[in-house]
Amino acid sequence: MNSDLSSLQIKDIGEQGLLERLQRFCPPEIIGDDAAVLLTAPEKSLVVTTDMLVDGVHFSEVTTSPEDAGWRAAAANLSDLAAMGASPLGITVGLGLPGEVRVSWVERLYQGMTECLQKYNTPIVGGDIVRSPITTLAITAFGQVDPNLIIRRSAAQVGEAIVVTGIHGASRVGLELLLHPELGTNLHPEVKNALIKAHQRPNPRLDVLPILWKILESQPKMAIAGMDSSDGLADAIFQICRASSVGAILESRKIPLPKVFDHWLIKDQILEYALYGGEDFELVLCLPKELAFELVQQLGQGAALVGTITPGATVILHDEHEKFPDQELSLSQGFQHFSH
Image (spheres, rainbow, N blue to C red):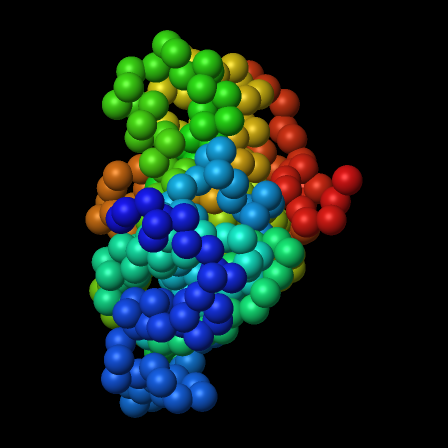
């Protein structure tokens, strides 16, 4: 891209000019009218989710390229669909942009979204653009699910095992390495890059669903509890327990962590990053123990049984070796918008 085009700002081409450039990221047979029409399979339920990202809150030039911001925005929405048991149909994109933003930045943002979405055969089917003093990205994702296979937070049963589909804490450490590069001076470059990639390019766990449905074929109407861990592992377990009116025991030593944590971070840091770091985009599922064990065996790659659903209303972090006292977890320890 020559210097003239790379310095082109949105105010130079206006709304229609920008829309014309962005339409090349969308299927021509779907866009062009006042709304998109998406077909769902017979006897499927429509699943809709919306996620917003704001410059300075969810991404910044210090830690996130436009391509990575686009990837993470798409991944967050696809993860919400996976957390409901749904397969994606398409997304719409709403952009609030200052006029001084470069056109090339927006095109790179869309390129990152497209790179993520293409892995899951998911098109961008429309959206809207408005002028805004702060760069804001709002994505609405549409998916479909068998009504008998909807994953809900409110379906956990006492005695069920808690499954996580992968490691936790990597994304938070990746962010710390981007903000404070000096922290990674003793890390092998390959390990450091993997942690940074975990933050910049997370993968929604849509791949888990076909495996889960295969395991549940003999019990097609069994209620499944779960959600994703985008706001932290502790948050996910607490939200499931609150919605299901149950408690949980979480085994601290069974939480799957990046191997580098053991000889690089102190215990308190490890627990903070794993429980409250967020943006790992793994699934947290509650299943009968034998089915949970089978799922973990088939997933491999960091999947683990990390706890048990219990009576009551408390979520306890337990050390099976009894070197550390039990700790009651709460939502107040993780990130919450508008909290002090």
